[in-house]
Length: 273
Image 1 (cartoon, rainbow, N blue to C red):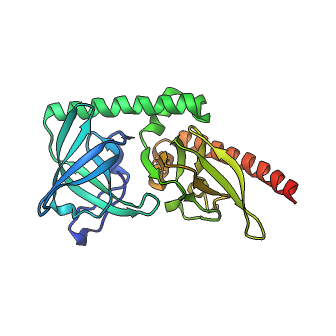
Image 2 (cartoon, rainbow, N blue to C red; image 1 turned 135 degrees about the horizontal axis):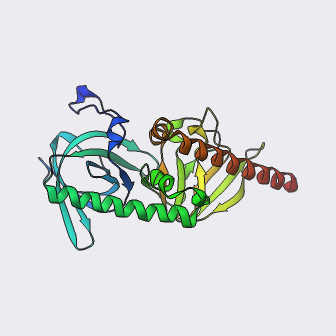
Image 3 (cartoon, rainbow, N blue to C red; image 1 turned 90 degrees about the vertical axis):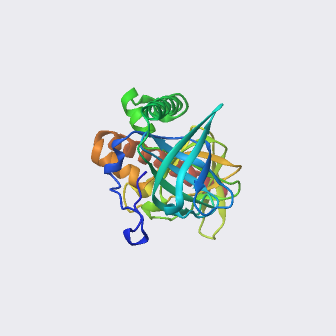
C-alpha cells in the first residue's frame, strides 16, 4: 500500500515509501469485512497483500475507524486478521472504492502463513511476467522486484483503461493484461476513433505519463472484463528510488513499445486516407 489519508479525518498518516519495507503482491481473493455498526457484513476483494497489510476493493465506502478485522478466503481456509485502517480513495476505472489496512499485531503462525502466501504468489506473478510478456529478458531478481510492486485491477467491458492525451501520472499507470482483450484506438483529426491494435494477455499498455509529462498516445478500451497487473505512479516512484536500474530498463522498454506502436498506427492512418 502507498497512499496516505488525512490525519484530521482520524486516520493515521503513513509514509508512502517507507511502508514498502514489506514485500507485497497483486492478488484477487474474496474478503469479508467486519466493522462496528454494520447490520451485516461488507464484502470485497483483495487487490494486493503483504505480510503487514492489505489493499481491498469494495463497492461502497468504508468507515475505516469502524473496521476491526477482515476475513480472507483462500482455497478451503479462511484467514481472520485484525486490521487498522490507513487510507481510502475512489477508483473510477473499477467503479469501486480502494482501502488500505495495516494488520494489527498478528500471531506468529499468521505472520508465517502470510509470508508464505505472498512469496508463493510473487513467484507465480514473476513466472507469468517471464513466460507471457516482453519482460522475460529480466533476471529472476528483477522480475520478483516488479511482482512486488503490482496491484490487481479489474475493468468492466466497454470501459476505458486510459484515454488519448491524458498526462496525469496519477491516472497513467502501467498495465500488464492478465485476462481479457483490449482495443487500442487513435483519434484522428476529424475526431474519428480508429482501432489500431488488439492486445491480449501478456501485452503491456499505458505507462508513458509515469516517465514524464507525456500524454497517452492512444486510447485503450476493454473488449471484455479485464484483469490487469497495475504498476501505479507511487509504485514506479518507489522503483526509481530503490531499484533505479530496474526503473531505467522498464522506462526504455515502455518507450520502445510505444514508438513501435505509434509508427504502425501512423502507417495504418496513411493507408486509410
